[in-house]
Image (cartoon, rainbow, N blue to C red):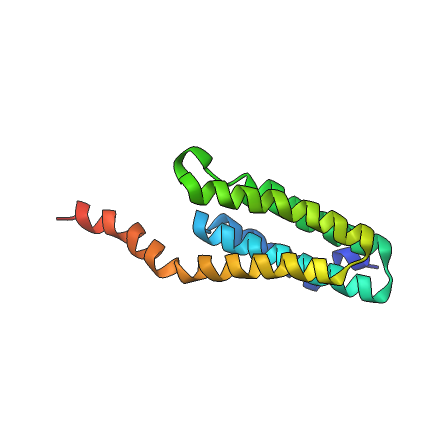
Length: 144
């Protein structure tokens, strides 16, 4: 009756993600993108271990899409200065490394990119209180 792609749990997950994205701040979208890329790498690692080549390629492709179309495209290079330039270089490095991991069937390379994304995710989560404070500060100042 229902195909696996349209199960009830998948529908709830999609609605939850879409709702989260629509109401998310730019900061939260970056964290969500990091987390999505890391989930896709975890799937790729599982598929590598089980020998599922097409599924591994699909998971790696999804990770590359998140990095290039989400994380890298969100950079404001002209406003972000050296930090944005370094992130841009890192976001250019990751897809190349992921493609190499796929070709060489290297879990270590997948783990390396996952580690980089984990470090970035941790940093973004760490600055969340400061971002929230900065977001409420202008509103509080305008009420004076």
